[in-house]
Structure formats: C-alpha cells, structure tokens
Amino acid sequence: MDKNQLKENLTKCCGSTNWVNAMSKDIPDTKEKLFAKAEKVWFELGEKDWLEAFTHHPKIGDLASLEKKFGSTKDFTTNEQSSVNHASMETLKELAEYNQRYEEKFGFIFIVCATGKTADEMLALIKERINNDYNTEIKIAMGEQNKITKIRLEKLF
Image (tube, rainbow, N blue to C red; front, side, top):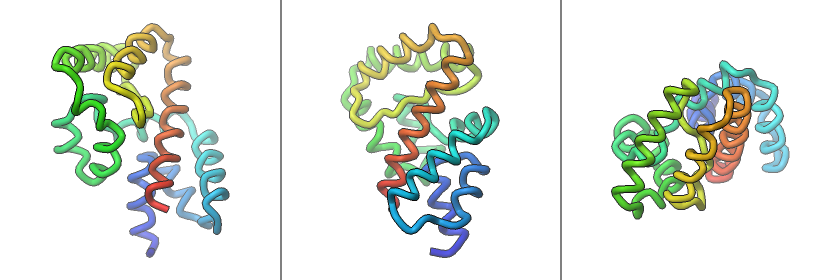
C-alpha cells in the first residue's frame, strides 16, 4: 500500500499523529516486529499524544456516536463494543451517566479494551476506575489504548 493508505490504516489503529508518523517509517517485515515497534513507539510518546489517540474513540455504549463520528473505524469499534448491543436500557443509561462523570473528572473519555467484555463488566470497570487519581487513570487508559491498538493491527495486517 502507498504511504497515504498506510497512514490512513494506521490511524484506524491508533489516533495519535506522532504514533502514526513513527509507525509509517520503516515498517517491520514481520508481524511480531510490527507489534513490538507499535508498543515501543506508544510507550515513548507523551500525554498529549495519548490524549489525542483517546479522541478517536466513541464513548463506551454510545452507539449513535459510533455510527455518526467514527464511521471510518466502524468495523473495528462495532465488533469491539458488540456486547453493548445486548445491554439493558438501565445498563446503557448508567454507562452514559458514568461516562459523563468520568469525562468531567479526567478530561478524556473512558478508554477500555472492550473486546470480550460485557456491558455490565465495562460498567463495573468505569465505576471502579472513576475513583482513581488523574495520574493513575491516564496510565491505565494508555495501557488500554495499547491493547486496542494491538487488536486493530491484527485485523489490518
């Protein structure tokens, strides 16, 4: 694929411009090396880059946002949050409430690797993590973004 297509695909994996630029230089020749590079680059970035990447995610449980704003990553995010489709209205309302409280407290959306988790499990996680301080939470969110990026890289490559 050409450089622009590569960058577009990498952006679907992680929304940090600096991560995409670093990854698009000298693409490793094996999947293992690609994943190692992706993780190394991610953990060398700073908070500004992490926060930028977080803006490329829909809120957990916000299916309207998934459809409208994140159409280019729809195939990834729909599958990642598929359990939300089967959640009760009560759970969805509570997720929305906690998403708002979380974002007000930390200044970024709740980031969790949703693959394989039920809506109730994600609700329990946000209820637990909302009690963290900012420094603890941004590190957890950064780790979750790294997991998401790996899953998406696997789908792409």
